[in-house]
Length: 436
Image 1 (cartoon, rainbow, N blue to C red):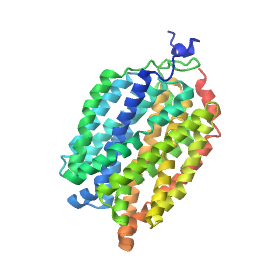
Image 2: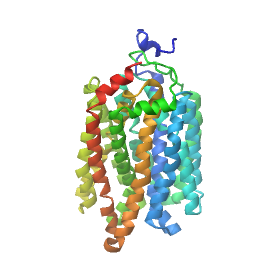
Image 3: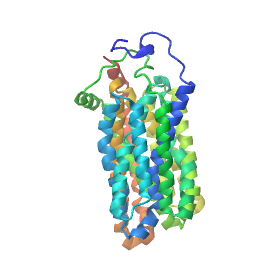
Image 4: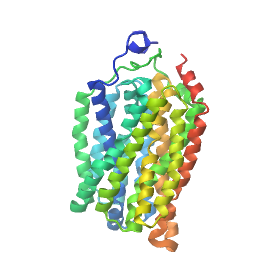
């Protein structure tokens, strides 16, 4: 094969079917790995009230540990790992990272100080940096461009699967055997699944599913950065991803504490009721968005970013209702609507980022999006809520967290504006990426 051609789809031969046993198995396993990715980071939020009581630390410290300690390595290593994934075997990178972060999750159950917890989160972030970007790159070579929005939306249901099936189980384990056992139960299975993944999933041929020729020659890191920085649609997507990162990570970290303080729910009640609701409705929203794009967005690039814009805008009033309503039916309705709308953007935005990037820079394009979302989201989102809660607590007591969490409303509206603006340029930036 010539280095300027991208396998069978680019050379005029009929392309293989999208939905084969191999591609379905690969998509399913990558989604399972991503499920553990979300679970292993999310269960700390479930354990925060117990950790605060045991270690006698402030909400500000908990915000730093849950956010900044994790995100430092996750963000910093994500881009060089993605650069490596654009050149070398992505399956092996994912397997190594999965095994390592699972080990760190299990070891979290043995920590005895807040500093050890910070170290465990720090190293867990290093392993999880190997997950998302290489997985998106692999999936782009398993399915044709016309199917990627749906495929990446299915992949995006990982967080919902974690909340539906594993989050309640983790809460049940914590309720009966303590929060330390919860971390060990979450981490140990991942170590064995990482080995199974390495031996049963193939590395796909790079560029095999492109409908037009794409260069397979490696691209330098500085050239990749310059090219992506020249895409106005991509820069707007980064801004939107940063804002929704702050929204999602602040909400996922502090919602269990919010429900405990404002609505007097126990750890087990939060995990067994709120987790599945978030998971089911989040998955419904993600799949609905993917199906809409698969049906109407195959030849409409603007829809890839403007559907997420509408979803983020609709999430804002739902979050106001969740945070400020007192009646069970009302705040639960707000939570349900927020769960449906807040994750719709992920699959389409990742698909759009791949759409405006050249073949050998796709993993880096995703990694920069993840970096942006994590840098503001995981680091600043939980920390901001923790600091503001401590400041408001003398006046509002346990209800302070109700007002500090209103930050998620503002971030959703601002993200909607950024994604809508990206639609102005996504067509021309896709044509720019297709030029060789």
